[in-house]
Image 1: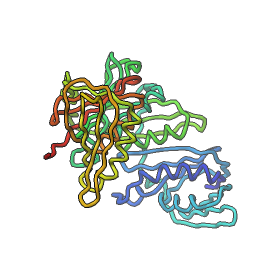
Image 2: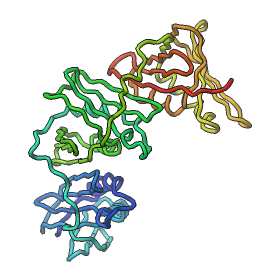
Image 3: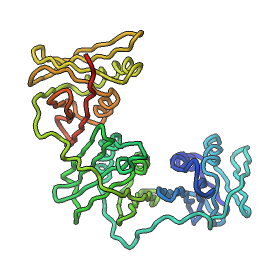
Image 4: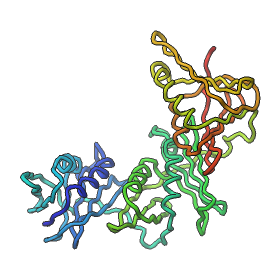
Length: 372
């Protein structure tokens, strides 16, 4: 294998791929990136047997071939090289990188040891509107669990019907649901995909302007991104198990409603969070119907306390309620509208945050019980 490529192109792709390489792989080759030199392009592939990504960059290829190299080691070197042409040349399993005045050698493993990515070419592809699909990921991924002991909750549940697409995530303390009635599929489908994989897909979509197609069966999902540099691919194993019946968790009616400017509330929450983070991450909201205002406060023993008051449109009786400050902040960041509505029944029942305009998003958050 012998080729020349741009440092900036190689660095951009390696920084993406090295994120998903396992720290403690079950086999040494899984810590490597597979380099595949074809006519006028270089392919880069990583695969941990559950999540796989394949991307391509332009290259002047003199000799085709393939080899695997330690992914993070290669990324560390390439990221520090100047922005110039990199010459890549292999001899058996040894690789030499030459860039400007730099000359680096490293040992790799033969490409035959690298496991092949799953293929679902026989299954018709489902074309997805890129902007809408990315919007669905951004509105929900943040609420997925990171606790691997509850694996099904580490996924994003995707459900389609004649009413459109529905994205949902929950970690047991909060729930995010985004509905897209303008996204329809020929047949209803339901699957739970690892949030970790979809976060990488979100990053890929944010880097390139590409069309997205989805192929899936009962075990795997494969996303194909087609753009100016050709086709990139992300494959992931679907999560097994029954996803919680989350629609039953959302209250059908509410006794109290608060409408407030989203950015104003978010800015206040983030300032109060400085104090909340010093103790228990709890922020208290005092809903004052007579004054038509919301008071946010937090205390940090031996440090001090903070309080902010915001104007709001309030219906229903007064209420003191408390939330995890990060959960509240995450929800406000995910809602893109100018104004949001917080709906509540009591200090111990689920509250729902939703935008007043734009996309239909439901963000349910469980309050925290505190002693006065």
